[in-house]
Length: 312
Image (cartoon, rainbow, N blue to C red; front, side, top):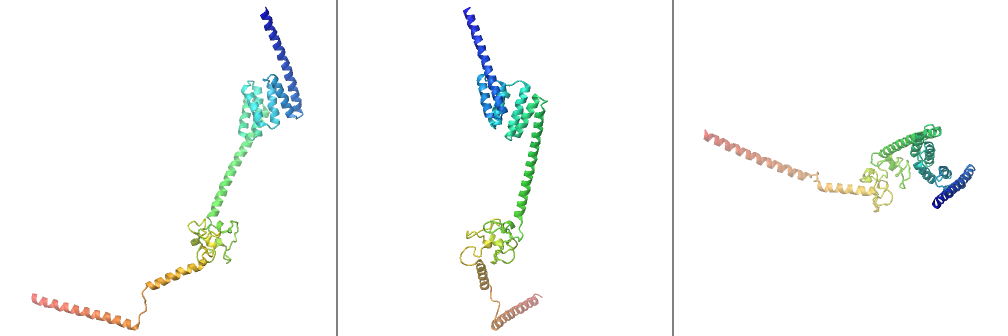
């Protein structure tokens, strides 16, 4: 009998505490709702947390807390709270509201694809939710626009790349150096009228930009797209009058090898001029050789005739 009274008493006390907690919970929720209506979202968050401290499983307190976090732009915390509810709630109507707000939260963080999937889940639980349907259509349009913009941007990039390649491949004077390169000064700044030798012909049309007697193609080096700069003074050879900085202008250095070559050819080639005496001696020698040859031929012919008479 004593044991029975004790159990009942404990049960009554538990119920009494539970009712008291429920009353406190409702009080904090109402206070939170009032703050929420006044846009005092931080204060409403505090009140909803107090309500949850009393029971810990109030759907209304949890849902409203997530909303208050959302309104404060605490999107990660709000999303976490909504997802906890989505993992425990079974009621389709409540699930629809949860997923609707999950979609809103993803949308606020520009995660459009995740937002779209959340709205779809909301409609699966409540196909008649017109607000969710409207949001879903709006997000789908944004995704389509984004995809089109990405395609347009990709196409523009490809066109720009092709234009750059075409521009780089243009070589008006055929010296191997792209026009784009020759239309820049030594600091790399664009200057379509760059004219190194001031002859009125811009470099990109001039096959000898520095007028040193050496063609730009020759001075450009093995990679004309990156013209060589022998003396590393910042001026490429095809614009540098003394490309090796040896004190002798390139124009003179060009002439020196030619003169040397001409001298060598003159030394190697036999003299074509002959004096009158030498010419006469040469003719006499040729005539003497001819006389000797005729003499030998007559002697050979006579020997042949003698042999023939003996055989007969």
